[in-house]
Length: 118
Image (cartoon, rainbow, N blue to C red; front, side, top):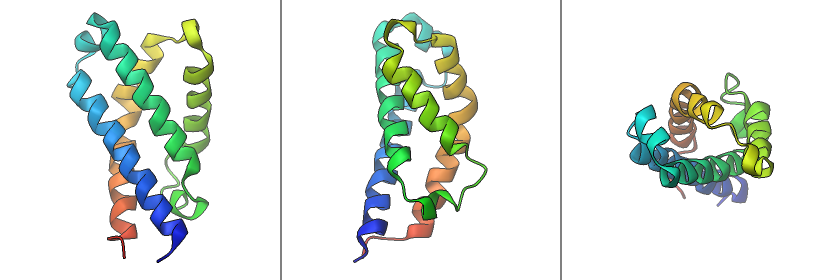
């Protein structure tokens, strides 16, 4: 058993769960996001967890997906965690709409690369 690989598997599972929840809450519709503070809060919370998990992934696994802007993800995490009342909901939606699909695909590929837990 490799603790680094096992940790990456757990983190990727957390990321996949957050991505699935965001998709469930919004159903890909801006109107659902805009209409409910509950949905906005849930999406922001899951983005926070998602980005926190992404920061903890090993450099080796992140290196397999160089097209993902890992540093920008970490920066976005700081904005949503420390932005408090200043969180720009339009910017949050842009991340959901434009960035999360590619990240979801990358998470799937990384999970496949790691294979089953052994």
